[in-house]
Length: 368
Image 1 (tube, rainbow, N blue to C red):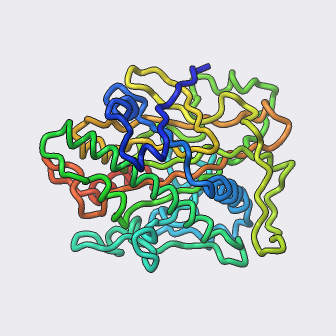
Image 2: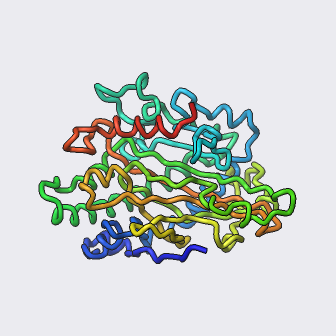
């Protein structure tokens, strides 16, 4: 079993006051780091928003197929709306283990925007992955889903702005010619930021009596293969584990017109399930995000922008084994990918824009 690593943790108050030490930032994001920072003392409303939205993830994943089909956008390579079985994992496997709901977070910059702003080079016809409007479920289908989604994303991006400001303090001292306030400006003003609400489906018990450990030996990254995020900072909630047998995600609005939050298991029934990071030394470690905190990981765009001073973090997710529980255990989480605008350069030497960089990543990860 992989060891559990302690991520660097800072207070939101210290981020607001600019008192996070440069040593802490290097320990969190530098060349020898795990590439993850945990922020505690987040706004009080975070806990309720997290519980409510991650409950919606189970409600969404269990909608009838015809409802989910209405939320698919093939033209956008499924990077807006619902996606299941549209990505490839390692060895060319099609990913049927998790469903994703993608939304553009351009509303953070302008509530009237539903996707990124086009540029001379990128428009809805040649880059629909980032320039297709959001596809929200009807209010009658998932009452309260859209405002809950937007409110939690806004909160996470607000915190990401402060993390970015701290990163800028570090970069301005360590990197010659680094533009003052660059990363904070990216996070605060980009219309390209995306959010991904994930529903990892319950694993079915194995036939033939094989032990999960035997069947999955050497294949730990089964729910989400080892990968790098391609943005700047990825905001993460802790995962919510739900026994969908004990708490069926059946849409039945309460008196206030909202869907009641589902019962959250106190911990994963499988201690090996969760987020894993491959450290700079090649060691695989498990990282646990406290339920009342927000974590931030570094992505490839930030590594390029900082000339490698901050490193992107290889990570994967291991599933909860059916053999470890009598129920049907689903895992729900939210990732918010803060990213540069499409026309912003992420490689100053090769003059590669984020749009060009992202297009290559999308092509590699999408089922043809």
